[in-house]
Length: 301
Image 1 (cartoon, rainbow, N blue to C red):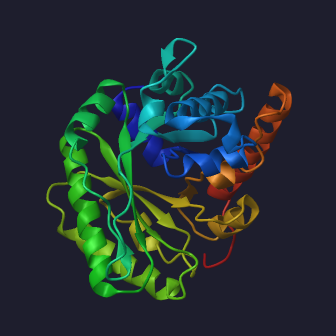
Image 2: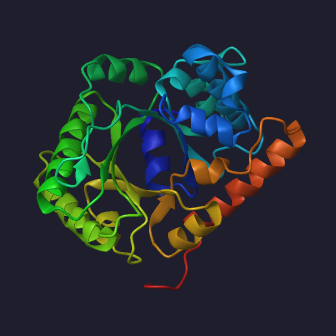
Image 3: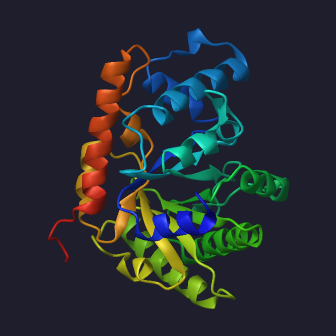
């Protein structure tokens, strides 16, 4: 797919984005959920080899196509890896799935109720390599834990700053200022974040668009102004710790927002499954998330 084709698919495509970007800190938990305990590997290289096998099994499954999965977010090692002799981005292109790359390097300690992204000193070279491999965009995560206005302004400013670096390298950023859904101040944080994002998007120079990956809000359709903002190509939602069933119920309440689920997509997949059982379980998960992304409830319509 060419860049314009990928842009059109992100803007208009019916479906959702699969988040396959678990990094070093979250990989052991992802493997455990997949049925691979820590005693089956020794050191990071063996761990990453196993998670790559899991991701490759997902990406090459007959259930995983651009008909319902319009994009996939990759970990850097996955982007640089291969399946059947082809680069992973090339495999995704062949299936009609738009590739993205996770670029953040983890979170700083909490300050003012938020966790900013750690520095990314090699960002420029990563972006150039990603573009050369046919990657369309990036994803960068930070976290809002409290309804602290100063902290939320800081997190949005950092996201916009990084996003503009991504745009300058010819890629489209997914800005992900995640609101912790377990926060006692979640509803107020949702509102502060929405308003800060609108102000920052209004002030952005030029006319290029970004994408947003947001927590499912406490109030359905709270993020409708962001969905309709001219500087936003698409708004996607993370599952944030919800089960797939609960995440899909919440997602269906939010018009114009599609899924970008990780744990909620993978929760029924196990290493010991036969290929037929694996493909069936993945297909069922994809169907459920696709439905919640494309068929919205009448709540807050």
